Length: 165
Image (cartoon, rainbow, N blue to C red; front, side, top):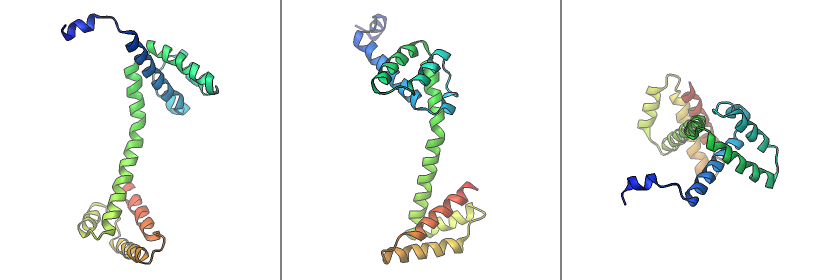
């Protein structure tokens, strides 16, 4: 049989069950969303009411409600809902990436990367080279004396502030 022949066949019982479980998982994500974000997702009123109701239920009732939500989601545009959820998660991913970038800058500066120091001074107008150099010296001194990394934290905070501006 060719692949086209398989497309004409009705879905197997197992495939239908997998699809329903996937819709239930999507419904579980929707239940976990804060109300403000849930309003941004394109849902029918019936599904929205079921999701809001699921938040008030306990244990076994929640699992039954999730099955109900999965059934309701068969009538919804799943692709639109998934795109809306992705768009809600994007800002969080961008924040995490920015956080990692700042951590990387801090670590490289503490390892003595002077080219990065020059690059940051050229990129950010408010960059105070002398202050950053002082924080780097203090952080290295704290590390050798096994003291808490106060200066390293201050360096991270300073890099966060200049990146925001």
